[in-house]
Image (cartoon, rainbow, N blue to C red; front, side, top):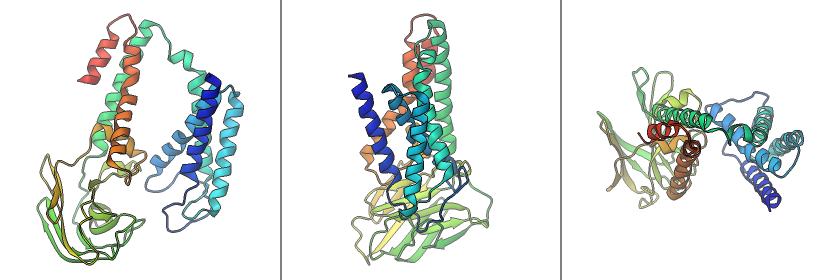
Length: 338
């Protein structure tokens, strides 16, 4: 039973790897093989994605009884095969750095299983310390999330562009008729594009003299999105956005519409015509989105993943904190709750 389950998980791991790596990419061009470990505006996020993607393969094959060195070799060969095939997939670039990161991810999965007796089942005294350390790391991750998604203001002056053509973003095919900037608010009156853009298409963008994006109000599909400058960009992590989902749905091609955003110290709002939503923002459950942000997924799916992220953060605290002996477990759980 255990072997069959491990083999099933191995098959699912390979299927997931093929699903995420052999799809058509969003880049408008390809540049051939890359020999750098990581590059681009989301370099750190992509490095972490490549490592995490292959960890389940290492875990499941090791549980299935495959020897560790063979598991790592399988991960490396699978990664090479995927990168080799990406040469003929539009919008995908094969990378030696991806092969290295994928192989490291496989090796880390192997290490988790092989070293499990050393960190999973421990004495009560050590269990209390592991609960405390895990709790401290959890709090650090949560506060780090808050720091990475807060709005920052690079040195001005700023210039505002309407329907700008920005790198890696779509061009909005409609026309901005009027822009009303104000203190902590922006309102745009525009003519809708002939069809909803598949990717983020800015209505307006506020840029610094160095072309850093400070604020961007954009349309993606049927959603109105708000992007602002945050420390996550400096760390080359994924940049998140706030959304008025289906806000553009009542707007037909060629219609004149009004889009706006405004905020105060505790509240951010988005509006399209008479449809508005306030109290937008991020929570500590959004930390995983800094690594991988599937912005077009349904809200309920993102909510489920947020919940699983929170469970993953604290499950170790509960597991080790429940071990009898000492008050370390209560201290750790109290820290997390506080």
